[in-house]
Length: 269
Image 1: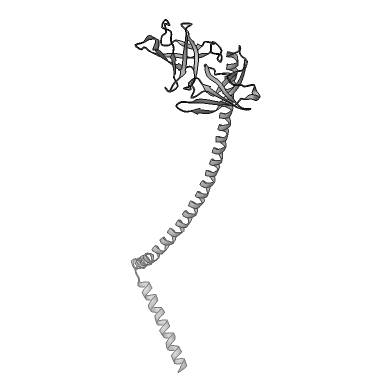
Image 2: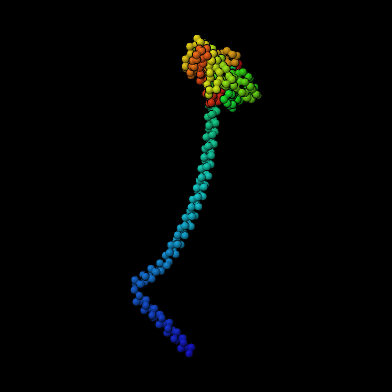
């Protein structure tokens, strides 16, 4: 019985193999292409998805690598920029020091008749009524009160108080300042006072016989006990005539730009 069953199974397997061979031998080429296409339809989306994921991961890796490179480059550029800024500041300091030295030399050469001490302005106390400068020279430098202070362009003012290392200078544009002066076209004396007009001087006590014109230069007269003679004060900008000729006055534009001046000389003799 067992032999019969084995024989029957062998026969069945043989028949299946023969049927498969006959099927394959009779299968047309286009049918094979159809099966292949069906297989491709199933497999291709999977393969495409795999390729996309692979490219995505590779792209992200490159992105982060590029980000790291950009960060390193940025830090390097920041460092270089910081070094350049530092060098630029150092050059600006050297330039400013050279300009200061040039001004000192120019002042010294211009006012050779006077014994002077160079200084520069370290603070400006400027309000509507008061215009005081603080300079970096004091008693240790031979500075004392009532000493005249000048710049390359003309008169600044005079020392009103002094410490060991600094001095306060009342400028001629201070509202409480008054300078005895004379005009370039006449020897007549006038008084130049600080005013509430921004940076302007008011000339008063102009003699009735004085022939003055706009553009005339005004300088110290040497009278009054503080300022030496012949230091430039400024230029007449306008003349205001009044009903009473004794009350006429003029506006003077100072020769010194008090907003920009930095370097001064103190006349010590």
